[in-house]
Picture 1 (cartoon, rainbow, N blue to C red):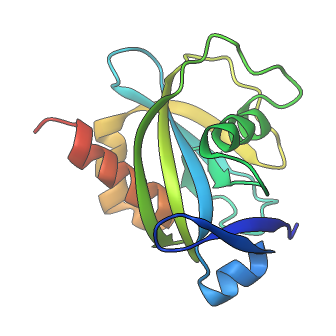
Picture 2 (spheres, rainbow, N blue to C red):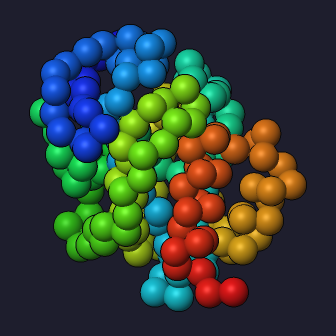
Length: 174
């Protein structure tokens, strides 16, 4: 579904609105948010989701929860909405979730030219996948995921690869 999104300049200042499809076709900067979900405070197991085969973009690919901000939305509100839509289908988002803002990155991946803010939460489940959005979701050791991303990159969205690599550089000690 095409929708109107906010467009921004190189400094992430709002400059107007445009159809998401035009943003993608013409590499117009817009905004998105992603959420890294960890099973517990050890930050060793991360939630990976398999995108629904019904999705028009990257169906069946492995990813982390993420999406575009809606018109007028801020990053935090967009992250909460995406989490609600993808993993808490027809359920109330748990009030105990604490969103930790990790970083903002400007990216061009998966035909998206956007600023993306990445959040981290701890939540072991349960999840209620929206079948239109997510076919499956599961926890996996993050080091195993990072290894798979290198060996089986075609299985993952470009955005997931980029954001996980950025997370590794910033937060995983060698």
